[in-house]
Image 1: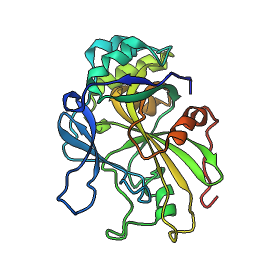
Image 2 (image 1 turned 90 degrees about the vertical axis):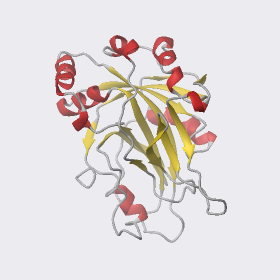
Image 3 (image 1 turned 180 degrees about the vertical axis):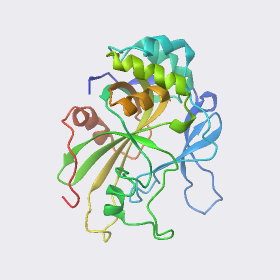
Image 4 (image 1 turned 90 degrees about the horizontal axis):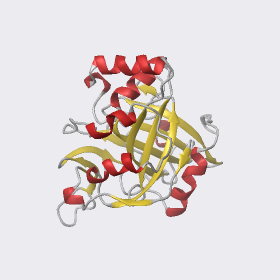
Length: 276
């Protein structure tokens, strides 16, 4: 954590926003639909289910095919951002976001690229230890996208915070020349800035599940800008800044839990030993 700003009202009415959070419409009497992150009218990601006892989730859908980078702030974001309340950058993304209260947080991260099912994958590691395998498929949850792990820390004796940076499109879609340009800049000491809209989901299994029972705080940053930067940073072991705009009206977390987030994010990172 570098610094957090004050919550501020951002965005435009949901129908006008390029990115918005929605509840899937289902037939009357059939229960609540999926929580969705929608980009330009198309469902892009399925999010953790409403109940809060189901496993934490971000799952890329077939219609997630574009990023939300803005040319007007590219030069500014090529370098280090000094202030989480930088009006020039935040205002540039105003029309992209749905109207809500957002908490700006400026983070310094060293991203590690994770491929689902391979070493370091949260969904086949920590999550399975708590919830077990999916009862129907007999498999771990599958996010359908590579993603970046950046930070984790203890919340208390019965809860742990996990942080993820999720690209809108897979790193394999990135332009190789741009990734190499950022890698060269970072190699010379430049720390560029990425921008994300973020949610906090606090999920806890129902009583009677596997023995490793605790609350998973999932802090998910969906990249608006910075796909090439994150890949370059992960490939070369370099740091990158992340301007996170935490949507306070979204996510599965209580107000007091969201209020704790800046202090938790300022803690030293610590991994949780399985079963502890």
